[in-house]
View (cartoon, helix red, strand yellow):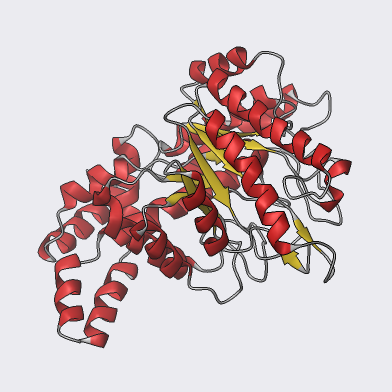
Length: 404
């Protein structure tokens, strides 16, 4: 006898086939979806006011990777975990790599920390003091070396550099200092490694930020070389920015290197992706799907801070949201959309996009997860697994890892 999930899938499959959807092709692309989770998303986090410890959080990078592997076990699409240095610094990176591989995982992007040292009060690579810039540059070069040891080919950079007051420093001189640093790092990167350059409009500096928007990041990348690309964080934009438009332009330039998926209501809130504005996420995926055939290599990553919600469950929910957004974008009738656009049928084109967004793809994603050998309902299966109770007991001694 068919289960309720199977009946729901059969009904959806019949409907999509009648609409002319290549269901087999859609499922194949969904099975190939890959998203990287961040080591820091599994540790204790909080706001600028307080950090909220939780029972069972990892105490070291090895336990962080174990939690990331548990998320992959329930979703089937996240075999990579990004690390942050020095938060995830270890004595033997080959041991960390081996630990990840033993769990069916790989180390993903390497993220240097250029914002917590006391010397970085006035900036890191843009700092007016050459000695501070040298320290920052050496740390990034250290991370290039770590990437080689763990088998990573992505260097992910975000600078907190900026100024608080008019006249504090020269915009142009700061940019030139940054580019000099990045040029040295770029030259030291091995062939096959990419540099992803992130941007943010404000915070922690409030007068200006040295990499404030996608244009500042793009022009810096263009000066450095083809392996320097822009990293888009969905929370790092002015509030009403059209992010899907930014995505389309960066892909057209061949410079969209990666994503930090999250969501926000006001500023850089780092909430669970699609928890506030799922339509925006879908529209971004509509543009991504349109450019998939260009063979651009895009690193899809999660960058969220789970302050009050359970860490692993929050990550699983994030990934299922990404699966559903991608599935809906794959259902857009591209040929009908092109026809409507060329004929000036404004509402016709809009309705074609809405039809895909309003499709309930949960049965489809459940079927794909089963194809991948994981549960059709990852959150429920994780809750029933006993993993959280097990690690809470195992990790009761010692402090949980955090942002420090």
